[in-house]
Image 1 (cartoon, helix red, strand yellow):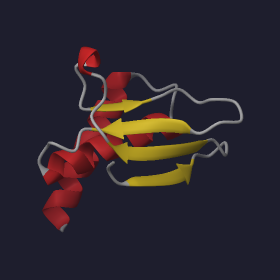
Image 2 (tube, rainbow, N blue to C red):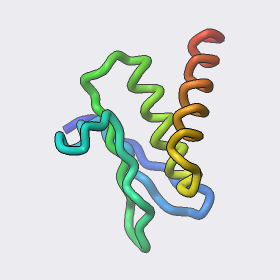
Image 3 (cartoon, one colour):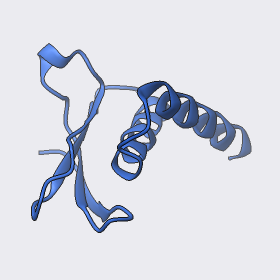
Image 4 (tube, rainbow, N blue to C red):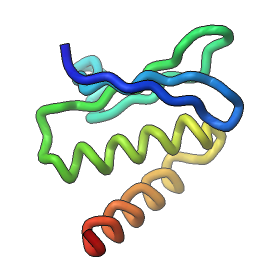
Length: 90
């Protein structure tokens, strides 16, 4: 079993991030499950990627957890831009 960590979004919804590949049929390296009433939601991230890509996907999926209503293209843009800036500054 891979590493896990939990956090809460602005509304108090708890999420658990696991370094575990999402189901094969989804063809995704990361997945944020929708918020659930009175239960933890899950975020899965493929651990078989390069470290920098894993960080970008974690950021991407966390953005979904905080901004569920944002369209995918905005989440992609923000996650990629933030990841590039962090990489250049660190």
